[in-house]
Length: 237
Image (cartoon, rainbow, N blue to C red; front, side):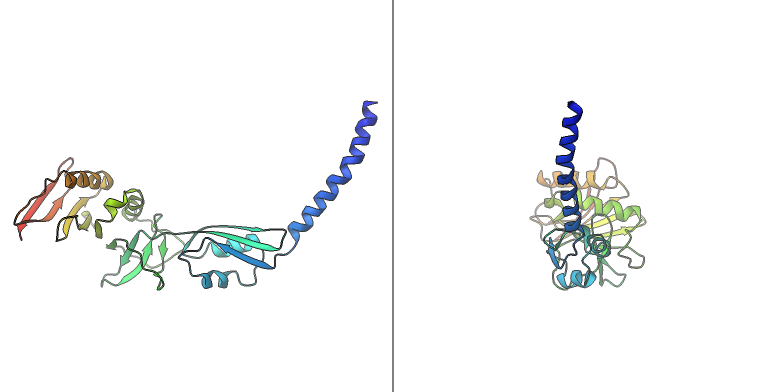
């Protein structure tokens, strides 16, 4: 009796499952004829459309768009309605690299990937000198100092990164130019080779304590290279 019920149940449900599977397979294999792009704020839409021109396959669209230097991640789904929906996650610049002559070369994101300069938008990010090598947007820069710097800027609070106007990477470590609130001149800060995040956080806390020279003295240099110390050099204004 139980076996008979099971057979009847299978005879009833199996055709429904097969029909449903065939229907979904047809819908999934149905070619997309419309493209919808979501998530582009800084990426040039025309450059995106050029990469996927006449492409209505989700895997192929993802493969092509991942080569775009301003795109960090892509998700593409071809819906049964015939729409290929593409969601884009953009890269955000953290640094503007300057050439040896001081000309803008390219941006760097937090993973040290190179991004071409856009003529449509300007990003208020620190300038950086001392980075060498040819432009290659497909691979990140492998230099540990560069990687530490881009990662650092993505972690630091905005109230600190907003003070940094320029950074120079040298054999002696990192040197940055900062403009502190309340001071009319810029200040050179020597960071050394390591613990950049801790040193900048300590410097910011030191500044907020109000222990800066006043009157006719200006802070020309701050040396953070010695552990636990903040050494300043003042000059007459």
